[in-house]
Image 1 (cartoon, rainbow, N blue to C red):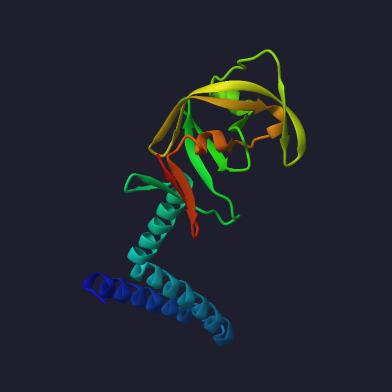
Image 2: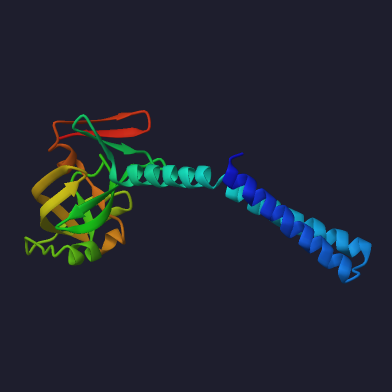
Length: 198
């Protein structure tokens, strides 16, 4: 216990003594007074523990935030982008699509990177063909519009003029598909990490 913590402890003890003396002056019945005093002791002990461990608590919170950030944006190591697997078992990544922040599910089962109609509007992506296409999804056949992303940035990896599919049927889901993954020199899964090599 350092000097600052000792001072805090003495301060808390002084407050407890003050509370106890207040009970005595008010002539609170012993049973009720003991219950109230025990409640104050618990409160002050919790406060003391919080003060004592505040650096550890802040450090732990920072570690959780860093891990969450690494999970969603990826971490660059040796030129490779490592994306942590989420608790749901999937790989999600926060990317930039035409300068807009967009969350993507990485899906090697999707042939083409696909975005919701709302995401397309936010990113300023318009259809590049008058004729829609019909694609097979996990929810069956879906009619989509074709478009192209001027710039898609995933971590430090940038791809330009990338083909996209857009549809209201995707809801709020955006999928990073094989046309992005196959543009890389390599990608693999190691344990709970998806590793993308530019």
